Length: 281
Ligand SMILES: [Zn+2]
View 1: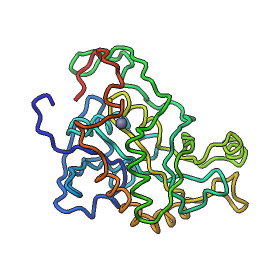
View 2: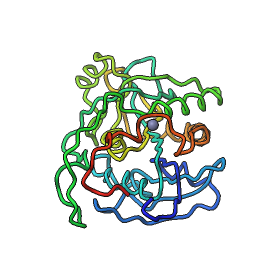
View 3: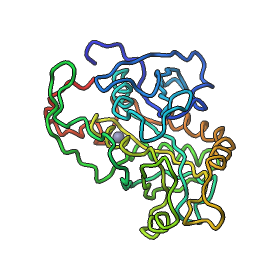
View 4: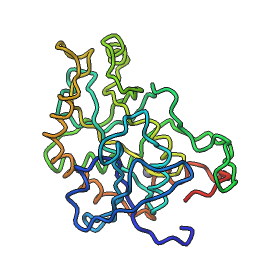
């Protein structure tokens, strides 16, 4: 812990709709070698677990998906003690059976983003002069299975039958897909499409954090619906209608996670003992 006091054990990357209901929320501003995170971290407690929230798009929702400093967000979470992350996000359904209101816990990911900084191990020196080594992490299974199971169990407990598994396609945005792109994504058998699930997942892996996603379908993507296509208003409306129960599921999933020291998954050994060349916070 580098002599640091542990302030949180679990991280959540999601909007103010999630943390504003906690008691005694403490706002903590965190600096990182990669610049500022999307916003302050908001630390609070639920079910006896210390949780750090980072509003992915900033508290004023001013950051589009391609401008989020994903490296700073994950680094900041780790620097306050977080070792397990649950990341709720809004997605489009690529299959007609995954309509608005579907809750899906993905088990695979396809990266269709471009130009995002998606590694800490790029050989560029940090401000302290240390230079990261080149490391290729294993990413065959991009999500922590323990985290996935916690979310699935939590959703079932609230009578919201989740979809267990499926591939999340992550596009660059901020525009939505064309019908041709969307049909192509659907024909690959992919389940949902979003804009923020990558590089979040791989950066968490590089920092040896557990990471899983909780995807709420807010609309059918252009290739799966027959109307005018996705609108931002529709996304916001469906998200607003579901944010209450999504928060319940999220908090219960947090409560179901193991203590950091008792994790049995391999996420905490993702670097396989290799020297990263830089000091992880
Ligand atoms: Zn894990």
